[in-house]
Length: 253
Image (cartoon, rainbow, N blue to C red; front, side, top):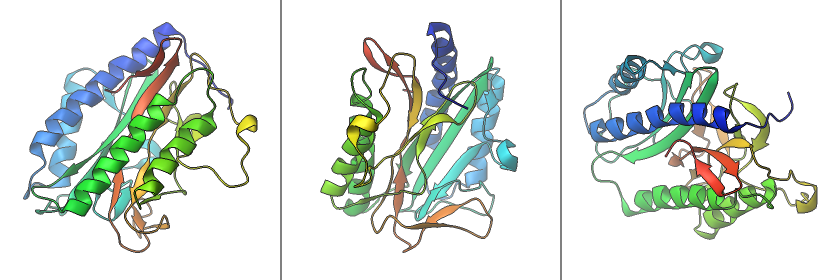
């Protein structure tokens, strides 16, 4: 596909989608409590988005059945909303949501605690969110993609957690997934100088997925839901970021 740089008008359209995502996440955060189903969260997100004149991006994407991805506890990403998935005290739920309008997409994810969660779980969410913020700070002209990936990995691993390696961030704009891939880690064999230069107009979704246990994951029998192999908890945070002369611009904040 090749990397598609975005102009100011493109970025403004992505930002409009991002504003809806931010509003939806704020609404869902207040609804996340013991007893609610992931299907109910999905319906709220879908109805609100359509009511604002936008389109949920995930529903029907490669036949995905939901408007949100709702991933509970050891589910890393791509959990399918269901009336049978009822949130319980102490759970965590990752909500990934994308929006489309006027030819452009935005994409963002948050992980919420359900009621009271353990200190270790709080730490997992805090470190994952911090790693995203660190990655965003490194999304500046003059840096390389390597700098985003490396900074996220260093923070996560310094806190004793592991970064998922089978799934990565991505470019975004006219398509939900575009080049370049945006890993949250670097391989020992990677050379920074050979990494992609970050340039004005590049729009990327940065999305660390962090596990308490090992980084190994597998796909469940539904062929969508990705879970940790060792059953440990996993957290996921994501923002769509435009690289500008003034620094990183968060389009889903």
